[in-house]
Length: 510
Image 1 (cartoon, rainbow, N blue to C red):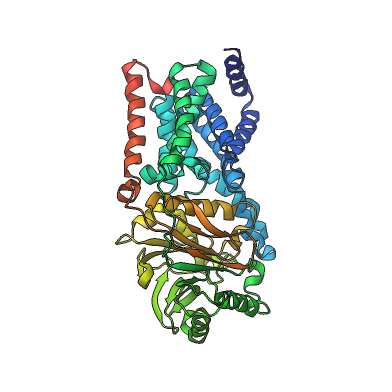
Image 2: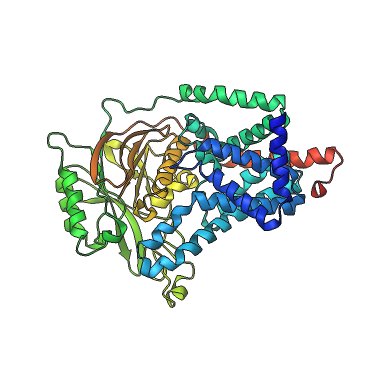
């Protein structure tokens, strides 16, 4: 019990600090929790840090204290997890560099508001485990929907590189977040209160961890599976659109497409905006690419329709005929479009990926495209792979996911690794394999349980032939999405309120 008392006393000392000193400690605690995200992957630190956050949550004064706690911890957490956000602003530092610190601070603080609101609500309705898990869980769900959504770096994402990734097939990322929060609470109770139930919970989690790996279904490619060629040109963003280098990157991709004499793939995939001519004028280029491939090709490029511009993916049949066009529909705010873009353009403020005031136009929505013998593909372009709800919005179930991206915007430190991790999560949630091709990496073939079966590393110019793994039956998450966990989190908040009313306590003054 001595160790538990010391931890408890340390928490009390933090609460006794002046407001701004306490904020500094809480921001550092949140940053520690953020180290669980890729590429560091120190998920035990996330559990320990959130355990301490729960201890503080139990002892702060009322919902205002809980809001302050959530805001400070959330700021530190998102500052650490989302520090890659500065990278796009230094692609053209003379034009956008001045925005970088404001972007990081604004995004961290903005995301932290969700945690502030979640913990305030949880405490106002009674607190305890139900209030803590229900409050943050609901806040994280809201973060994925409001203002077009930004569900990046959720607490549950720290488990993507562990044996329990496949559990996302049941309850998705919200289920993994609930697991992280519950284990953190159990850890706090086991250390500080030495509660038998908490110790047993942690013991059960330790036993279930290897079992999770054992029960993960086999989803490897069959011997006769179609072969897909991943083409990764490694064009740095500051060089990608340089007129003196455009042809070099195009010819590199063309050479990778034609390589490997003796065996030809069933499909060749180039990354997002891989061809620097508009689709409207790309006939000769697409014919040349098709000749080099001797197979169908998927290519990312831009197109225009009157005054509107689109970030598009095209499927090109052997012979150079375009058989399908998909326009990205979930655009990146402040990147691919600017709210009030025409107005802001008067002051020289544009989306990072476009010079036009309004940037790209959104496509009509999720859809599947026919890939012949490979089956039906659900196309995704870059940022769209972050949103599980976009995958579920397709009118029919696909046979595989097809994501093309230009992660050069995300730099080389953490952004591309986190983006890949979320792609793996989407496959596990939906029970579908994914073909993922990135300009600078990391390109990968991912099976229907989220395992990477083949890849091209970060910053490499290369190609890789990989068999396409099969799909699994529709998962529970594919059928019901976030609805079950919305009910769970709301139910936990209801339990929190009923429990404290049953004890004759008023949650606001606890």
